[in-house]
Image 1 (spheres, helix red, strand yellow):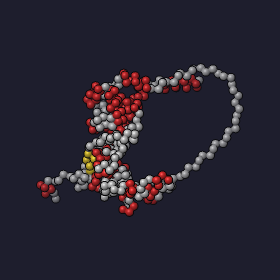
Image 2: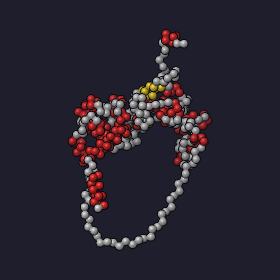
Image 3: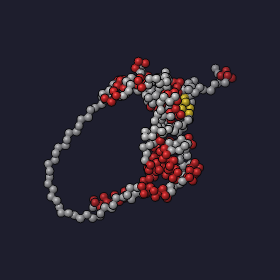
Image 4: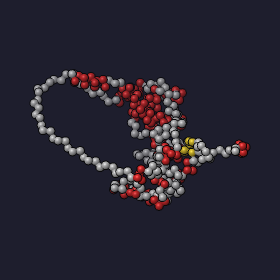
Length: 333
């Protein structure tokens, strides 16, 4: 009876429609990677569920849509949405999900291709198994279980590590900046590989200076060709998908407004580094404050750790507020 029930369960699982499996995978991939741009229509991306945006692309054919999603487009979309860990099948499933959002089912040819690529179902299990002659079972002595290894416990948290401001290593005293890896409080000094790393002072010597952070002007270094970030691990000729877009956040009071330049960030960072885990690409969805930044959230995920610290206010607060007309200013008491 148990064997029959097991066979029935396996048959039910194998009978799940391929389309239903594809739909779930496509939705998950879309939400993880594609919704960043296709949800709000960022940088001209066709919006999810907007038939008008997708109509000319649908007319070009599903094969072209697949190719654009896999290899990227000249308009700025990186291949696989910048998430190179996705398989081709996952990317195509996400395209199918986007098409379904505008009532466009994927083409019969695409469906046939997906079915052909699907793993073959295992052969049906027999409903009856001939019973063999009973084999006498001899009870063997059971060996006691081996003792479980004792794992080393982590060192107790020191008072310095518990300090909420201790993360901001770039605020170190001048004589302690750019400390060797074994002394920077980040790398494990007991690991032999730590001592093989090049000390920052030796690595950064001769770079354009900046009076903040690790004292290197990284934007000037990038513009001057002193550093050349590698965009693809396997293709040294691959270039970045740079987005020349500034986001301005208005600040109350007399402090200048904050300017977030996408251009300088996307010249060496992929969009997926920040979206959607750190910043939700939706207006009003991100509550940013200096308190959260100093606790290592939002901008503080990088600034204060691998980018200039929050003590350099004017590097972010760089947009002066509009001057108040003299007539209006004179009426204030």
